[in-house]
Amino acid sequence: MTPDLFAHQVVGVDALVKWDDPANGRKIGGVFMLADEMGAGKTKQVIEAAQVLHERDEVDRVVVVCPASVRPVWYDPELGELVKHLHTPAFVTEYHARLRQWGDKRGLRWIITNYDFIRDDSRRAILKQFCGKKTWLVLDESSAVKNYKAQQTKACLDLRKACSRVTLLNGTPIANNPGDLYSQARIMDSRILDCKTWFHFRSRYALLGGWMQKQIIGWQNLEDLQRRMAPYVLRRLKKDCIDLPDKLPPVALTVPLTERTWATYKQMRDEMVAWLSDESVSTAWHAVTKVMRLAQITSGFVGGVEVEPIDEVDNLGLDEVGEVVGVVKEEEDPLQSPTLTVQEVGQEKLTFFLKWLDERLEEDKSFKCLVWCRFRPELARLVSALQERGSVIVGEIRGGQKKEERAAALRLLDPRTAPDGPVIVCGTPASGSMGLNLASAHTVVYLSNDHSLKTRLQSEDRVHRPGQINHVSYYDVLATGPQGQQTIDHVIIKALRNKEALATWTTQAWVDALKRE
Image (tube, rainbow, N blue to C red):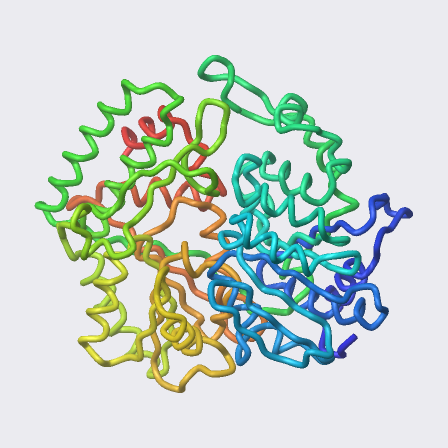
């Protein structure tokens, strides 16, 4: 092992290298979940363990499946984790629409792909040709396979059968509720939980109620679930194993809406409560769609989203048995969409942030900040305003952008490549909250918050990780009414700070929250 490993990483590598550990209850071989907190170095531990196993002739290929946004974190030949931590010969392939490769063909073979790409049977069939008795399958950000009905979950289960080893990596293995563990454990080995189907798992651990007694309203027997999972899971928190500066408590920055914007907000809120009150629990995901409109208004616009059915997501919509049925999605370019228009209703948050930024730049001429925006139109407007000013270097992280643009933005806050002057990198948490190292910034601002607890936790730790030398400050910009009235921003941030998963809220819970504003 390399000498630069932290003590907890040495323990992690040892656990990953072991086939099993009967003395500690790990009797099923070749399966493991590394669930260290974000920033504790899960990727580094896997890379180190793979090299050890290769030297022992136990592994000759490692297949890494991850979200599309995380693929460059592994593959990038200049700033990726592999090039940073490899110390033995290796050959790395990015298996995607355009095949890319680098390294020494005589070394350990790495294949990096993403969940969406291997959903296709023909693509997965090609990949399976390179899997065998010495292949290690690594599922990064494994909450992507927590929905047992999802096509990508079935694809990973199929791929897992072709590999001798499998390891799941996830800093938030239970993003919403204990049900998240079912599919992840099943992919490792169905014998761990000894539940043949989701309904078997649900009958053992879930409490049912609500509409037709089919909605999950609580959980039971969690001690049994923990006992079964414990031998196969290793989780450590950064505060217990890495000497990092503190994460300071989040600070709420309130911004009053103008009378005109507030009138628009109240009209939407009141009509929404009336509409939701007549709906059954089974349509709770429509509540999420409607509530998103309120969040848009506090961010200064309306429009640019649609609802479409899908078979897997991790943060939206539940049907009557607690399964995901739909997702609220933004257009690839909502500002240019002929069918989904965006109407600006105010610039309160934007104006406030620009003034706040000027004050920070007066204090620190090399100020570096990460700004998260939930909505693409909000992000586009912010980036445009910053670029027009020209006082700071600006980077952008969003879905659908060119790889070169994304790489340039990441370099701005990577401790190895960050420039000396002031830098603002703006992004959407949905496309940039996982796997990135942006530790050159020590200030994080949320102009608007995603309702997903997992996304919030992941996005916070992009800057709080090895390489950070300052205390990290977090700011939530919350809109209020002209007289300080609370808005949907307050509902969302209260739930997130209380570690509540808003995706599991029923329609009635949303109605009650809106009435309390």
